[in-house]
Image 1 (cartoon, rainbow, N blue to C red):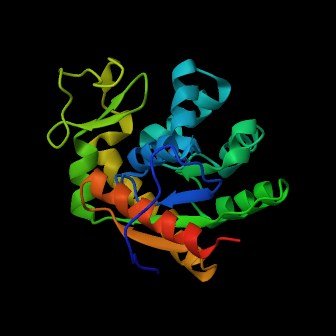
Image 2 (image 1 turned 135 degrees about the vertical axis):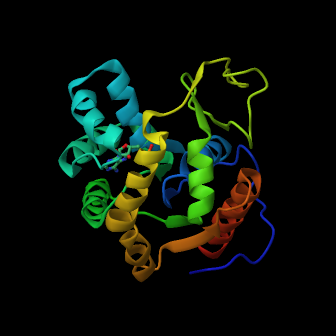
Length: 238
Ligand code: AMP
């Protein structure tokens, strides 16, 4: 794994055409960090969890199929998620770079991603691993609130909204995800250990892995991620 060396120089609004994966257990803060990064660096934010939840709330065929797995804390079958990914990658915004959040979740999905990207003459630049301890994960997930309109995350204790159950940004209604209940959290962590934790080694072997301690508050984590991206860009200047 690689370490940080110097202060970041990337500024909000800078354009960088990069393809980045955020890796880490549920509760590591992938969604929060990916949303901020995408806004600051003008990258497309691709969250397979968000796409699946949107399908579930609209009652599409995919959503109906996915819901039963999601509510149990299990992974949605690879074939369904891969189709969804291929569709998402046919949209033009990915040409200027993207952040993947929640995909891949296992080695099979990592291989599918490689194929999908290869067909488009693309590859992944960086895989950023949000290293998080189990106690922090449980504390974060059990208090998480999500905006039903813009997807911003809050926390009952650590980051409460100004007005009860209302998003500070867009005024949307906040809700608790059905899979953020204690039993389902445990199941999701088991699934992560069994299915996803091997991806850290997978990308380390490909020399793509960069690690950030994600037990800290979100603004500190985002600064470290931006430092890493900045450093990467610096050392890969043509
Ligand atoms: P997330 O929002 O990333 O925590 O994902 C929520 C749920 O959506 C997961 O617990 C899975 O049930 C499902 N899901 C999201 N991404 C994937 C994926 N890449 N593969 C399979 N299931 C997924």
